[in-house]
Image (cartoon, helix red, strand yellow):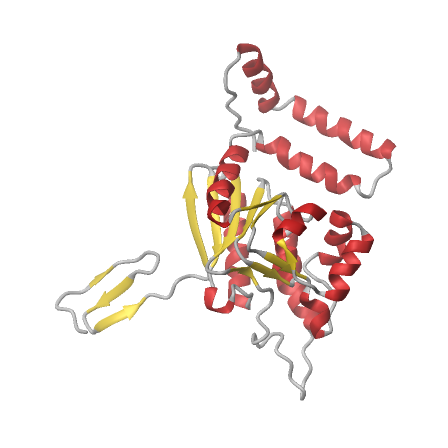
Length: 288
């Protein structure tokens, strides 16, 4: 198809019209949008169930860094395109694809991609909401669990698929699972690799809530907007305090709480919160 004029239009699913013909503009593996103070990131390899390759890793990391650096972002919402959230690692990726003539060092993939991604998600300066829209397997499941609040469609499921291919849980799985559900259940999930429905994941405490499929994104967006209007600095400090307290005895946890309350007590949001409470008005939080 030859066009008589040359023009270029970009956007999701857009076509690029050139004088020589029509070319489909490849969509990014990570889609980004902004609504108010909520930055939404969508894993976008639906034909591969949003499994990770090196390019998608790099793009997601870059978008998370961008959100972390943007003062206009007060919450991040992460979800997947199509019928899966994320099927974990793409085993066809040359970085990990088995080669009998030269076995791959899988530690390279962990150190280069997964470990930095997990650290970035767990240390975001804003809350992270994860909306699991379909299967979350292997690294995809454990990355979902890195979110602060995880919602899942009732048709979604979680699978610790590592043992099925002779590996151990990665992407923080060995750290996250026992802390979320205890050693016995963590081992059961990891050793057996059974599919865990979203409703059961909620009952076990792996996720915040399971919801009707049609309500997943509206509820996730509403939750993200609610968090974006709350005192971001205090929310992030709460996450950090709870994570660090796992390694502390009660005395040291109390000391850590006092240190954080001292810091937050001098911040704007505490002053604003108390003033708004006294005036019976909605607070306007700005700290980040």
